[in-house]
Image (cartoon, rainbow, N blue to C red):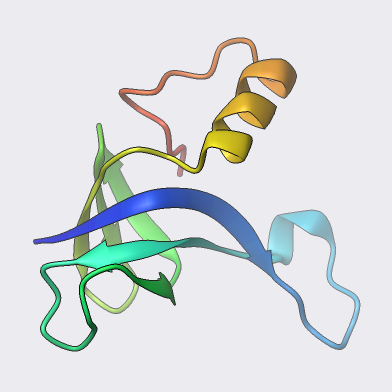
Length: 92
């Protein structure tokens, strides 16, 4: 299992217009314990498919344990989503 720190949910921009529900959402953050990257390297995951608490499985089959979110992202979530649950931060 890989660890993702300073993570946030981002939308992958496409050159064509897509309605909001069709836009691709992925996680961006600093990865650890992944042999394909240096510890602390910034990555973008594939699309999250399963979320159980802070454990996320992506379309590519990778499994991540979410560590601390990006501080600015966390503040934005708290301001815009008062029911944000840091123990279950990703809704699929």
